[in-house]
Image (cartoon, rainbow, N blue to C red; front, side, top):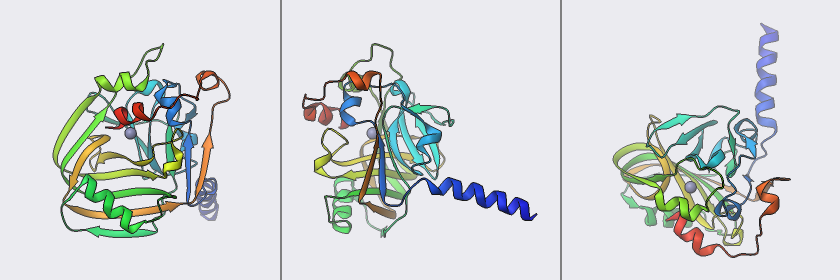
Length: 253
Ligand SMILES: [Zn+2]
């Protein structure tokens, strides 16, 4: 019996030890994704050693990623959601070991914009990263996803012209993602980047718009930033001198 408790403790500690607190860990850069660098860089198993909550996409840009409670879900362009195995990979993702430092109940109906303004009041330092998680009810939830791409990969702004959009009403689930500082331009998405997954794990995607009627908002402010970049492949060949701000605007909205 004692041996089993020891093994359990070891496994538990191993799972926690590699993910430092208040650290946003990201794979690759948003400009690399905009340029079409869709080859997976690290496995989901490795991604989960850096955090239990986050967003991203998958190898060949196959759908929207939602990492919640240490599980990775793929919201696909056909509107289905599936849990992904540890050996699948990601070309771009950001995760944190979520440890809320602010919790606030939401009791009134809020638009996407009002929701973001509420977070800005609760976490006023816009020069830090904020991981956002809200579990609640959503009278409106407009999300999109993108299909798997074939090589040569087209730029992201071309792919999102053919994205599929889903308008859900009265769904229960979780909004999660990040507010990043303005200075991450080119590296990540300045401002809010949020994804959604329903509680029953049947609906999800990259949020284009939503309204909430209530729930629990949790925020985790992160003052540490960690990146994993590719040594070779597409990333090594890319020219990052080009400003992709307008492309990002088109892709996000
Ligand atoms: Zn997204």
